[in-house]
Image (tube, rainbow, N blue to C red; front, side):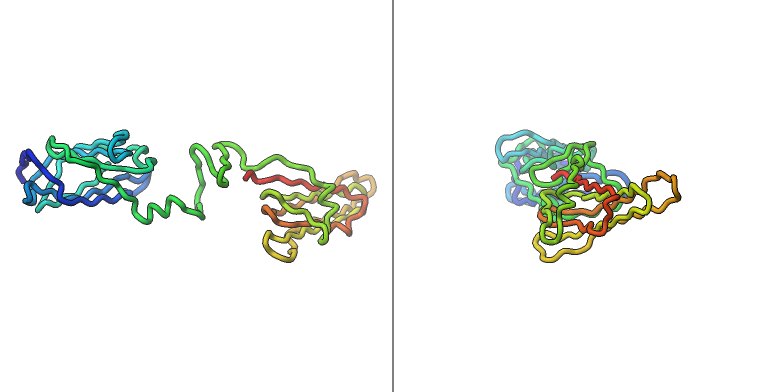
Length: 270
C-alpha cells in the first residue's frame, strides 16, 4: 500500500481501551494498550500507510509525557488499530501507576487537537480492589507488604511482634472470666514436669468474636515417670490462634502443683 503525505487530517471517531496484552510462555507478560480509531481527510475515509506518533500524558491538557511512540500505521477505509508498547518501545511503570491517562496523536507531522482519556476495563477496575488471593507457590514482596489499612511492614521484616509472658492472667481464667484478645496472634502453653510422677493437663477454649459459645481448640498434657535418680525434666507445649475480639480461657484444674506452667502470647502485627 503506498504511503501518502497527509497535510490536514481529522480524527472522526476513536475508541481507547486500557488493557494488558499478555505474552505466552515463561517470564513477565508483555504490556500494551490497544488503540482503535477512524481517520478521515476532509470527510473522506483515508486509505493509506501513515506515520503517527502517540504520546501518553497524566493530564488532559498539561502534565508529564509518560510515553511517546512513533508508528507507521495501515489505515483501511479510515479504520486503524495499534497496540502501544508492542513495537520495541515498552510502556514504563509510570503509565500503569498514574491515576489518569490521556493520549495525544500527531498524524504525519500534524498534531491533532485535544487528548482522549484512556479508560480501564471492568476487570482491571475490580483487580484494583481485590480482596482474597490464593498463592500456590512462594510469595515474594518487593518494597512492602500491607497487612491491614494504615499498617505497613517493610520487606524483610517479621510479621510477628515480640513474645509476652501472660502466665498469671491466663491461669486465672475460666469460662466465667475469659480474656479478650486485643490483636491477632498465637497463644502458647508450656508445661514442665519437675518431679517424678508429676503430671499436668491444660485445655484451651475460644469463643470467636461475634459468636456465642466456647469451643475446645487445643490441649497440652505432660506426665513424668522416670527411674530414681533420673533428673530429666519432661516438657510439652501447645499453641492455638486467637483473633481480635475473640474471648478465650484455659482449663488447668487437673494440673499438679509440681508442674511448672507458662503461657506466652505472640501478636501478628496489624
